[in-house]
Length: 227
Image 1 (cartoon, helix red, strand yellow):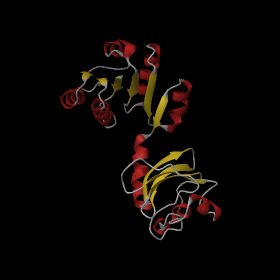
Image 2 (cartoon, one colour):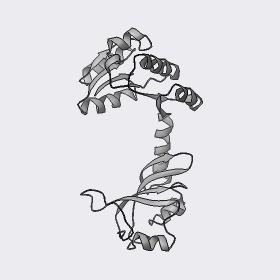
Image 3 (tube, one colour):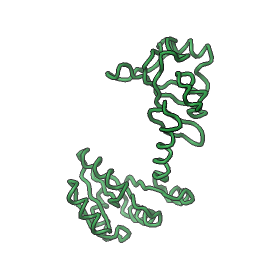
Image 4 (tube, one colour):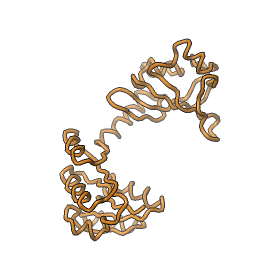
């Protein structure tokens, strides 16, 4: 893919690392001279030290032939202007960071895919690591629902039961579904079916419409989440 990344700061830099490591053709636009020089030294990509809110700069970066543009600056107004110019240049896939939730509707109105308030997401992950240590990873869906990974303890209520048995006993079903099972740390994930038996130490990917509440994590043997 040909990707134009606007901004080489706290968000743009790790994105650059991932995008270049993935074998993509990457151009980064960074207005700050020091950040631009650092990016040119660290990453295998073309770096343009200029203002991305100027259409000529985007054209110099080849945005008119890019497969995607990602705007990562710390200013929503800058990101909006960049996205509008990218639309004029008919970039097929435009994505932007949004820092202020009040600006989300503006990005929706112009039809841009967004990543909302990354600093808050990082803070939420850190808080979850302390508050809910049993959760390996999670993703929020809407206001309450979550998809999360959790390991089954040997004394978990669900350990040793098939999904059908767990559903009959009211442990899962309804708002709680097991989406995938990783066993012994190798091989492809198991796609669960009614006769699939949950074993101790299984790493489960779980969807919960009520979120990863202590009542839900109890099912997998993690009473520490009540603390």
